[in-house]
Image (cartoon, rainbow, N blue to C red; front, side):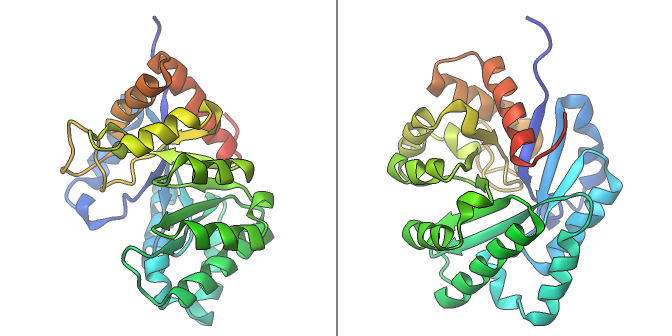
Length: 261
């Protein structure tokens, strides 16, 4: 067997303070260790600015610009204009992460919904895919995506955590599914059932680092170097070779973010 296909981390947060001690050395090591591309994902106005700084510094890092549902209380018309400006940057490849989070349930749900809809429309206006964050909010997420015609926008449901019935709804909209470290957890039966159900040509790999490190690093700081454990878990569920998964998810990631090889 030849060399394994490179890996694309479709969702990372390397601007997080968890990487302050060794960010530069870690990021510089990635290409030599099989991680060929990373999309760093914004969550707040400040993290969006830091994301763009990373895209300027590293050729293989791209950015998604958007406000996480729990951070939408920070949004007003002034920083909305600033957000739109950041979305026009050359290495911004998506609007995200955006959506609804009823687990933490803040700010008020109406505020989350308002900015979710506006950011979906921003993505439509700029012809960018979206990175969807949805936690304990499946019905409202789907309702807003349908109302705003998200099927015309496309994108990825990040850290997918719902049933295969909900997966079917997102599949019908043409969305990809971000699968990360949780797929390796012993107690992740529901997610593995969804992975089994979702076609391989709709799956992409993600870390959500520094969060959700896969087994055997569960509980520690996550990073892109651990993605082979996720690829192996997907391969096991799909009953295919790991290289088959790695080839498929590489192509899927380029397709998701509308990139050339």
